[in-house]
Length: 249
Image (tube, rainbow, N blue to C red; front, side):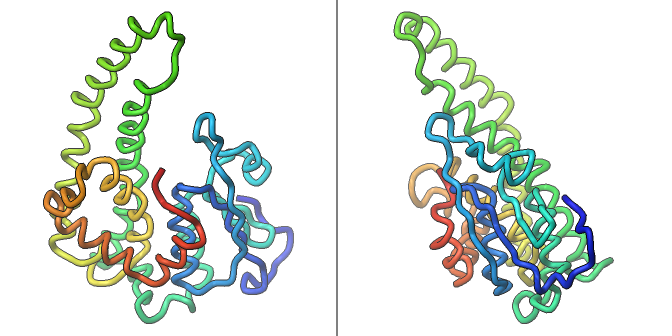
């Protein structure tokens, strides 16, 4: 994050969201729509060869990742940091349904919100990303003369890593989330908070990659599924989806 060289009113500085298609930046777009903040959207396409972010994003931030939020002279990266920045910088926009966007400090809701803000990227998303990688590896192209020997080995190794390492962790995570959402409609309590924005991408990824046949996810994790439906029914979420495109690959 860059520090501005002079003091300015943040309400007069332009907001620019650098949005990579089918990525975590969708949740920043959703929050901007919920808060009704004016912003410019710059969308970047993934590279076709490897599905990674294009090199143009490195001109925006050295890490070359998305989301990145520009606000005047500030350049901010990392979803959680951006969500908190928007809530702290524009508190007057957190009213009505957004009144508990950042729950009061010291309350159970605040502790829950903080937990899920960290859990999303610190615990859940790494396993989901590993799941995707080890599902894709056996399908990667390889020279035809080694394929009969190498492909079965790669397939076996990927299956074993998923079976012995990745799946057990996800099989712990999803029932835990299901149990928590059985107790309250939103992640931090009775009201929408930053935790719901942060958790939206990994939950959508989990339902997409682990749900199985249509309708299976609703039976396996009814409260997670119901939460996702509440999120997707929100007009601001629908506007973000229309502007940013599909969330999942």
